[in-house]
Image 1 (cartoon, helix red, strand yellow):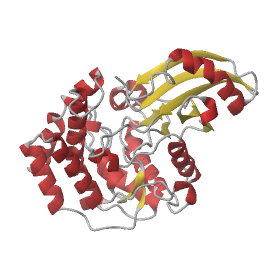
Image 2 (cartoon, helix red, strand yellow):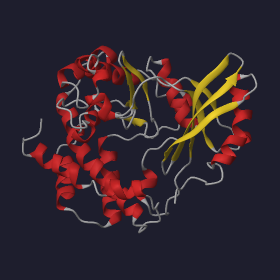
Image 3 (cartoon, one colour):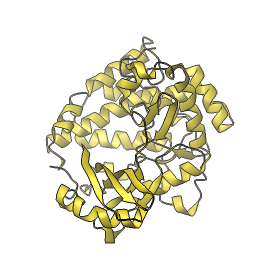
Length: 348
């Protein structure tokens, strides 16, 4: 069962509430057509629609999200997560720094009756990592993507994290991140030698603290919209926090996000191009050793996240029983295989 409120995400309820929201956001009649739910995620419902505004019909995306319920002793409660209006605030701040994001039309209010979330324009492009890596439509842009992805990380880091509008962001540097994932691993009491090895390696190789920057938190192939001309939007900011400048670069290089492609950056590019783009966007060079820390630790992080999903499906800790959770839980071994390859020098 989804942890989203089934009432506010039911097709009938959403269809009834949308016209008033669209009138507020766009003017005009607010008439809605083509409403379709795109995902059935545990913490977010995503809808595609068209609405008639003052300037004609517009293609839109509605996202509804909630704070997931946690047991009092559940360490996942301490992990970074931004929801609804916070998510929208991060996107607005990123846009002001030149980061491509979906244009925001409205942030949901209690009067909308749709929970927390926002309404944005539908951005052209493709987010499927497999298609971006392999589809012929993207053959021309693939050689340029690593540099574009790197430059965007640099722009993200230009956001002023001291702005009052971003006061909700949690500080989550290398030490806090390691402690958090170790606590989650211990909480599930599911011992695994490779995870234990990865946590021990991370503890021995923690990078020194750096002045914190805005971190997307899940910056990877699959969360970025691309068309044949390049990146059109960065999506899914719900794990945003403040932390280490190299975190997003390392997470992007994790093998799980290469989707069978040969390039170490998202399956399509070279680290050198990624770092060159980052330097243009951030105004400072990347640190390859720290990027490597986040890449190697990324295998451990993704393995624990898969374990979280699998344990959630098993309902041992009050989670969701969905086929998605079950399928992700079964993937725990994949990043751990990548971890062993990395630690033994066999990875790309």
